[in-house]
Image 1 (tube, rainbow, N blue to C red):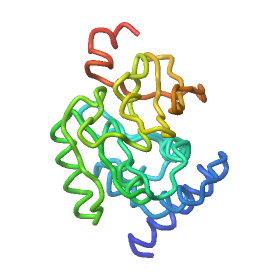
Image 2: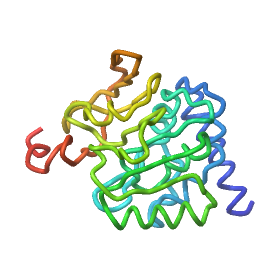
Image 3: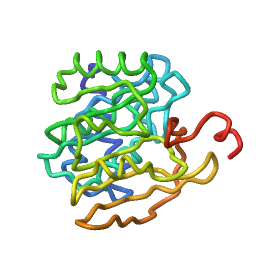
Image 4: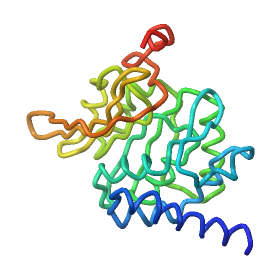
Length: 223
């Protein structure tokens, strides 16, 4: 069995064992998870764990999220294919690749220049042409391309950044972990014509969202 075949088999086991068994039912999301080569987004020293059931370090104190969490957050966005999506926290580029498989246009923001450069080069090499990477403070969103049909935040905020809600299109969805170092809940926000509503879903553990509407290093160390 060659490397490509082995990776496809590992992805299929990941989907069956980690996702379908945990109520990931969106067939388009499952197809994306089967297709995107997660191992390509993992640093060489951890590639043997690329399809394991957990997060992995990617440098700069950041992580690539557990496959189940990637699938869950993506499923919560209820994507149909035509959408423009904003991702906060590019990291390795894996979540952006999953989104790129599913929607028309992806904007993703990263505060670490090296991670942004690495992700951009990898996404280009893999043929993803509908992803734009921006360097900046993700807690402020990316107003130049707003409004967005969906927003996904892959770092924990002390509360939902107001600019992310403002940049959400009517009928759009925002998925975000909210809380401190030891107490985070995944939240799903929806924008209607004249209001925002939200549900609190499940405990999670993410690195902090840093920035104007996120944590700073001192405050994060307290929680």
